[in-house]
Length: 527
Image (cartoon, rainbow, N blue to C red; front, side):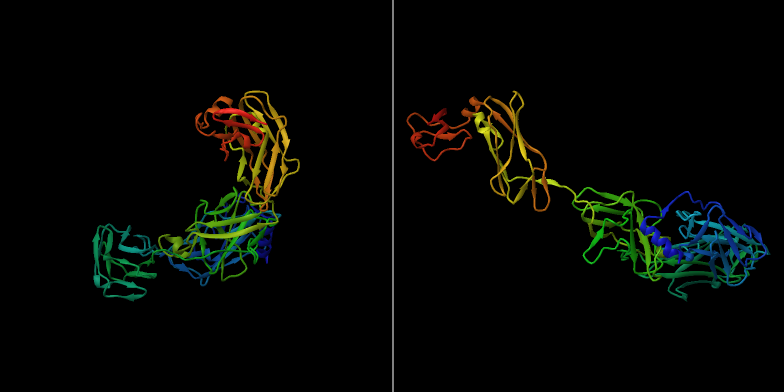
């Protein structure tokens, strides 16, 4: 019930992680060291008000041969301690280790306003004294229990002896998946106090996980003329190369609705995910491996995926915490990097087992803030940026769009010279939903450089996009403006142009409307 309460607090943003909760101080009963037997281990965290399990499967006892001891873990109700109880009291000599995996426990302060998970593994060791088997104290390379894709050889070093020999090679057996196979080609050798089992070719996974068991039966070895009286065994897992086939989906409370929408009214500094299988784990470390980004905007935030609570034991839940949350309405994507989660074999050796490929999920944020996008561009502004022969040309501008747009209230434009004191501001007038004009009276008269400026947000389309600031530059130079135009000869029909450089379809000045024109290279007023 408390896990459900904690999940609700996390979802509501009431409960937040606090690294100040410290798991480094702990005691045990019996105390670590030499004990007569192990019938119950109580682990206490005096600096934490209350603890509970994230995953009791990550807490286990291993014997001197690195085998797990059958037993169970129980939580003390309303306490800061838990109990490990072996199925049968442990009395055999040797050193036993109670392993508490990282992020298997959650600790709370007294008013439950803060919590934290244990960030690192915790190991407690207990030794039952007795007449130890000198062959039991060996080390193996690779270490027994290692997961790998191939095994070329295994070496066992017996520190209790100066020299170890092979007494009877027929008492050495190698099995795959508990079946002894004659096809396995291996050789045995002994040098000093080290015994080597060499495989040629190397043992490799055949596309599925395979258990390798190397057993030296009693009498197989001799150390300083003393034969082993107990079996000596090392075990490995030949795992298939990692396959990236684990899927994740957004989970409550950040699961989109049927329309793919997530409300900005939710607490979105944390996102939650679910995988449709139990027993998965998150990648170790703290490197960012989940990113939420705005598809058509600038928002982007990243974080590290971690294991979370869930109500369905057949699934695995994960969460990620971010430093900020999306608030602009629109399309977003959630990208989970390859290798963010995996199964148990993968957690031991990321080259094996199963993990996730890069995953991308999308959602639409609603109930937030509309982002203002200044990317609306007019189809044209005339006259176009150019060098013109007469400043009067700049008395009237036309702005055209390829779509219907709205004009902002009190929309205006400014025309100003950069090298004289001319400056004028005038209202923009709508001719239609796609055409707008602005006129300046009085118009500029002097040669020089002029800038037309239309403020951002003057125009808006149906999608809500606005224009960025619009500027156009013009150079008025009566001499250079005229000289750029082609001219006719005295014997040829007149070449007639407007002051903007547009050639008129007639060659007869008498047919022209009243106005200023360039005729055969000269400025002419037609009345």
